[in-house]
Structure formats: C-alpha cells, structure tokens
Image (cartoon, rainbow over all chains, first blue to last red; front, side, top):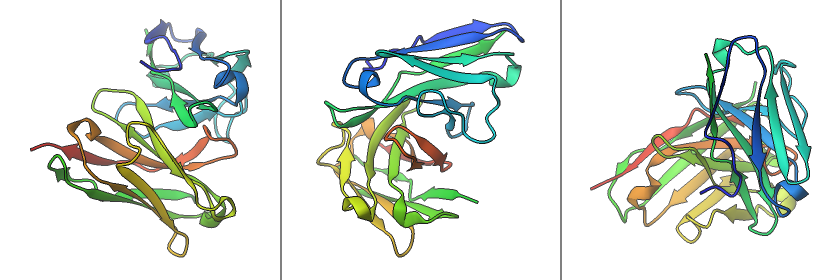
Length: 110
Length: 121
C-alpha cells in the first residue's frame, strides 16, 4: 500500500474534465512540493506538473495541478483519447527520507 | 538535447549481482542528482534511490526495500551513474529507469527508456 493514496481509476468522455486526487500526510505532501507524471502504455513516465502547479515546457495548459494541506490534485481538461494513461503523484517524505510515488491512477477516456 | 540511456539489464539468478548503467548527455552532469525508479510487471512506479551531486558530497538515499543490497555511484568524468544490485531477489524483477532530478526531490524532468531486469532461477 502506498503512503500516497490515489484512486485506482477514473474515466470521462472526450472534451470533458477530470481530476485525480493524491492524499498524503504532514510529513510528505504537507511539507514538500508535489509532481505529477503521465505514463503512456509501454513508455517511460513523463513529467507533467512540478512544484505543485508548474508545467514544464511543452506541456499544454489543459493539465493543471494544485495542492491544499496534505492533498494534491491533477486536473485534465479537454480530454483526448491520447490522454489515456497512468498518472502518478510524487513527493518527498521528510520522516522516511524517501521519495514517494502514489499507487497510480488509470485514466480511461470513454 | 538531454538524453539518459540505461543499460545492463539481464536475466539473473536469485542471490546474484548485476550492475546497471545510466549514460547521460546533453547537460552539465556534475550539477544534477540522478534518481533510479523501477516498475515491476503490471505494477506502479517505485522509487529505488538517488545520488546527489558533488556539491552535496555525492551522498545517496535508498528505499527501505533495497537499502543494504543496492548501491548507487557516479562517475562525473564520464557522466554515468551506476546501480549496483547485490543479493537480488525475485521481487527485484522490474524495468529500471534512471531520471534526472530537478529542483525538488520528486521532480524528475528527464527519463531514460528503461532496462529490464529479471531475477529467476
């Protein structure tokens, strides 16, 4: 079981918006930045969001991130079939001295 | 252009050792920390460990599941990071990725394509 809790799956129709939650604690999300990654089938993960809400160059503004207390959220608007992938939240845990990955959320675009 | 390329993955028997390499190019290697992440078949991503840059003494941190068995080192003159894996267990079977770490511990801005490791008799 991951210390960071994500829903196993979410789904929505093309063009709609979906949010993916990531719940942690005071020693991890509550005290450090959160990043989000997209992993398309059979490929390496790709950085989508860093420092809670910043997008690397080349990531469209359909992807957004936010953090409040010990939880973080990834938002994806204008869903496309190409967004079907696994999404992971990541942060540092100061008590464990470890990088934590959420369990991952599989997005299905119906 | 930033590149990271993992190599060294193989089929190995339980209890044996294996060394993976992460060869990098396209950036000033010496100022960046490098992280290893693995993914078991059909499972999620799992942090393995990382090595800091020279400014921070090339110190390392490891996941509890590999601490004492795995060792990360770096050769700044060749821009390569190594993952030495000893006393391998079937549970270590995974694709191993290396990634460049950004400004925070969880920011991995460039990844390699991964190299598969299978631990089986």
